[in-house]
Amino acid sequence: MRKHIRTSAWINLMYLPALIMFGLFIFYPFIQGVRVSFTNWNGYSPDFQWVGLDKYKALLQDKNVLITIKNTFIYGFGSTILQNFFGLLYAIFLDRNLKGKGIVRTIVYLPVIISPLIMGYIWYFFFQYDGGTINDVLGLFGKEAVDWLASGKVAVWIITFVNTYQYMGIAMIIYLAGLQSIPKDFYEAADIDGAGGWIKFKRVTLPLLMPSITINVIVNIIGGLKLFDVIIAMTNGGPGYASSSLSTMMYNLYFARQDAGYAAALGNVMFLMIAVISITALIALRRREVRL
Image 1 (spheres, helix red, strand yellow):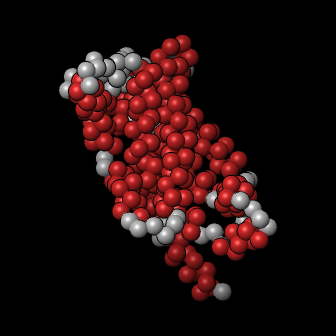
Image 2 (cartoon, rainbow, N blue to C red):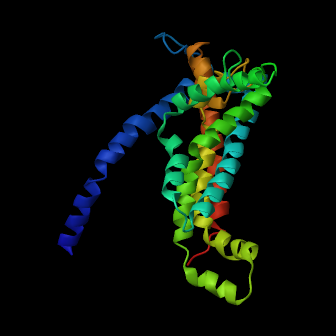
Image 3 (cartoon, rainbow, N blue to C red):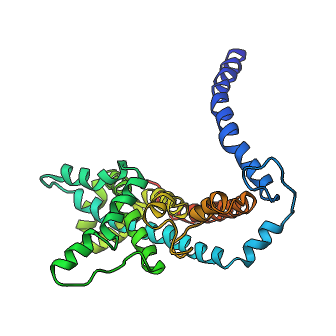
């Protein structure tokens, strides 16, 4: 018994490096961010004053914050829906005995390994007004060039498309693994009952894919709600804050406006928003999972 306790104690000590790293690089900066949000610190000066809840009150009156929250929801939920839809379609397509499916899988997954910042610049050269690939193609057909990124509403959906294109490969791989783990007996039983393709998908495939759906939805929501790199590369949040997310607005508040207190307050609100949405979605999806 003592030997078992001693062994468990040594095993628990193995957690220490991870806990120390977590404390230094996650927990401590988070506490510092909360502290800074109650000050008027500019991010550089050693001098600052405590202002209490003034920064949080300013958030409620800032129209730009409402715009960025709306954009953030589009990035988060729009990307989640599209990534899961196309990821599942590709997974169903590749879950067959097809020649060259390994090549297709590689092509779909390839964008994942590219830096999001680089991916943003690649697509920027497609959509830019002067010399953009799309406008050059339009010019060949006698059409006038379109400033695709000048409108915030259009830019938001273009950015959502780019984010979807880059990361739907992850959803595809997870769904493909889920499809391949479903026992064939269920489909054989459905065939005996005379079920068609749609009924089998609805009654067999979809319920048994719920663990994969849960993983994809949570990962996609968190990634979309904190989207940053692609926005910076394609529009820098502009024009104005029309295509900005909470992450890019926080970046501009800190470095452009030198208002670290306001940026920290916005960051804390963003953290709470993502935590509440992701935890709620996780609980709701977990309840729908089917245990084999």
